Length: 260
Length: 278
Image 1 (cartoon, each protein chain N blue to C red):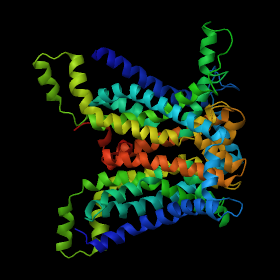
Image 2 (image 1 turned 135 degrees about the vertical axis):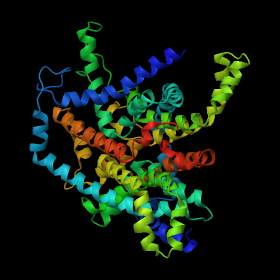
Image 3 (image 1 turned 60 degrees about the vertical axis):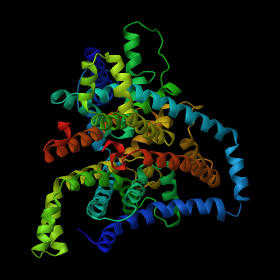
């Protein structure tokens, strides 16, 4: 039985990683169509991706939007998470579950509603508005990460600082934020990633001016599977990999070490 | 530590953002397209005419069927992995969690694209089948219902595994040892002790996967055929193609109501902070 379980888990892990690995390998194909394994290897599709002004513009839009969303969600989420962990008020659990709604409500509905409002306020294609809308989706991610991070911060340290005469602002700047820094950074990274990878809201709000990378991939997939998409996908996988790596390094690989 | 007033002050930015950019747009969208629209008849008539339309009924059936299929598949595939994770540590644990977490954080559009590359007519699976002589003409594996189930299973499996793992981690292993010591067989220990103790994980995992499935859009839109229309796709089409806002609003309201009811059940059953396996 244990051997059967191990081989099953091994097989499934292969199936889970294979599609991602194959896309990355195909992105380095030297041929003109997607044959696996590629006969020759080159970086031609990456050159085409980064050489195309449209794709470059999309990369720029995605980055700006994700920076806005990441900063906004992390800042706002940090205050809220702190209030949840340290505050004591009735209906705490209910309020938290309400704040997590943006990742529960089907994104298509949220996106249409945001588009409906944006169309009347002439905000379609506005990077700031897309960033703010992405921040709404990223807020639950930030909250979930920071709730567990702040729970690990000893409240006695804060009491000590207050009793020694620190102001609320000083308490935040010199005690709470430094102690919560690993959690904050990881929240910011995943908030950035949530926005960078988001498709549905971007699809509705992009207009013609603000197509993010996922939107341009979506538009290309509607027509034909061109190999440049493999390079763009590999790029997005690379960003995910980089963020997971940074998170792992910064948090001392705590998450990956498993059961305590 | 912080007073009630300070707590509310800290909460304010998040509440304001959700109210202005989430609740208000939703409320306004429903209000404008269902109540204020001069072309719309009485609300009840609009609702009845939309939900009794053939295409909508068909989409509701398809959505439920695919979501149930995906939930069951993900549960059956995910349970053994979660069990393995809960009972291993060190490099084995790290390796398996790596294989779960990397796809989990990869863009859904990229994950869907990767399966399109595999399953397409000239895709890698067909290339392999043709090369080995198992088939002589390419098999149609994309743009049908099985393709949707494969794609969605791939996207949703990590949610199930992480939820189950969180539940299984709390099971006391000495219970199983005691049962074994008293002569219970492996199958009996699983059926009488492990399965019941992991049941709340199974229920939360199944609920969260089903909730996410019924609102799925990207994967079914890209991997499904013309007849496999899920409700979220129909909502998108009525906005983008037919520009029928009142139909879109009625379908959205229905989907939203079902989602909220299921989320309320989830809320009653689980620690909400464990959402998404955090």
